[in-house]
Length: 388
Image (cartoon, rainbow, N blue to C red; front, side, top):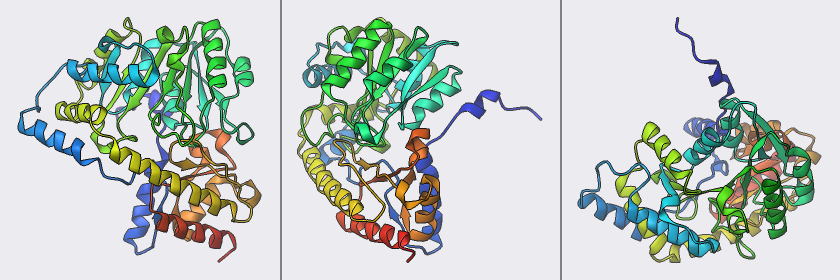
């Protein structure tokens, strides 16, 4: 019997999809379930974006195009990044991808070799660690702790980075915690990256989901444009998860390498989706503003409700649409409580350990659901923990 390559043993997954599948099975058996597990806006894609895609289909945007993305879309992206990050950015720094995940893969493939080390946030988006391990380089976890508002500790980072570090991954606003790096944090990380001459991959897919203050990118700091790979996409901001539309910004000399990886893997990103992307970045953002206003209301409801439940403590997240409450006082592990709430409590959420070892003692709830459902979920959590 032919064997599977051993590297497949190192490839992780996203537990959210596994929990979603189990929750759907329970629903099919007749159990009531409230879904707070999946990281997806529960809003429809804005109509102007959908209409742009429909028009593109009618116009014949259904064929092969350039692997890096259509030139006019790359110009729009470059202009958007220039405006929002305050850094002059050119179209030849842009590669368009089917979703943002390929940028993670391409970055590690092109910038890291055997024997090198990659520092990544933990708890963090699980694909970071999965891709690092799969490609056989050393994964070094940078703990994100509640006592530090789930921000990367610059002092701790200094201890983790060494001459073998070739890449530092940051994510702000952050999944799963909702934490946001301060300008001081970013300056400290930039200083370390420059001192050790390493790359920074900054995952900014939640950049327009900041509740207080203004979003700040490490890309905008002096000396960082030439060593930063910026990951962005349409999934969260424009409720376009199923459209699979992402992109990376990188130094010009790196862009041809990412383009070749697109040619070798995906060929290109869907043509009519890119036309929708132009509308998303240049059209009205009224729907985005309404979505964020609603998310803020939901955030306040779920945080207040969780803090009223005995043995649960929850910080107020500054971005994204997740809360990451501390459940250590319940006496249950993260996985035990995830499974209990799923199978008995009727609430689908994720164990903090789905995002790394430092997620133990926490659960992640996505508040991409109605306030009515969030309130019912809170009641179910309270009843389950009370033994009811």
